Length: 113
Image: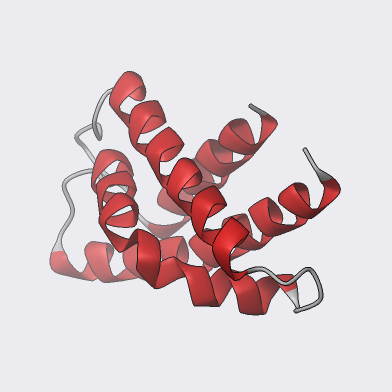
């Protein structure tokens, strides 16, 4: 649960830092559901890929493509209507946050949380 709160918070910060929107994104319930699905996919991918020795960021980058469908759903849930330039900034901010969040999940799974 802490991972979900951490990831939702990170995504919200990325949105607020990267853009200003006049319309809200999807509902909080839709955001949480999309985030839970992405986390479940990442956890499953980490179990398959992580050898427990590799750098967590390397593992995070390696597993990202296997959960692309879920990542797109999370991005869509959080991204408010934007201009093209705002969308590009949003995507740049969120991409780095996704890798950091995945590395956090890798470390969390290694600890057995």
